[in-house]
Length: 199
Image 1 (cartoon, helix red, strand yellow):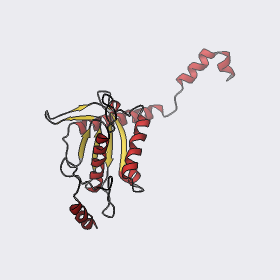
Image 2 (cartoon, rainbow, N blue to C red):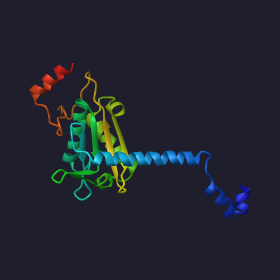
Image 3 (spheres, helix red, strand yellow):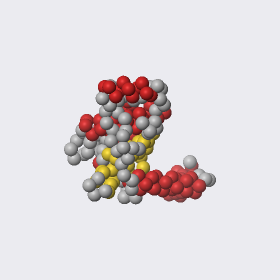
Image 4 (cartoon, rainbow, N blue to C red):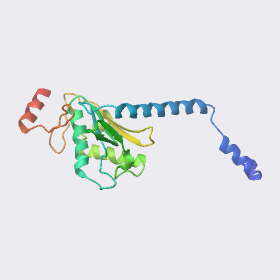
């Protein structure tokens, strides 16, 4: 400390230049992880919506139009449907241009509730937990992470695992089950039949 005070330029340079012993190894690991996430982004954006994949431009609504409960509910229905069927991935930050067969990566930064990465993930997980959690769904069956794309924008990958047959997920008292690239609500009659067949 005395050396830093006596010669601040030299002392500060030493602090600035300091690197841990395994710095290069950790840096390589970080770069590999970043490349893996970018490849994940490209992989998803080149696929079409299916029984196990859904794209949404935003979760809460976009910054141009403001918050939108319908958009949020559609995302929650998809998650509910994945939980009740075979699992799947909901990708936030991708506009599905179905008419042209392409996907436009708009990024989660376009979401009305995006302020920072951590804040956005907290808001999103709290919304899912409030609507769907039965005391363990979020931690055990849903994984949420951000992934940077080559265009510099980030997507949010919500990876959903199928619930065991002893459990099911409901959204506002209704059951949704993923079918092809849609997530319909079960009618009351099918609701009862579906629960009976699940046991």
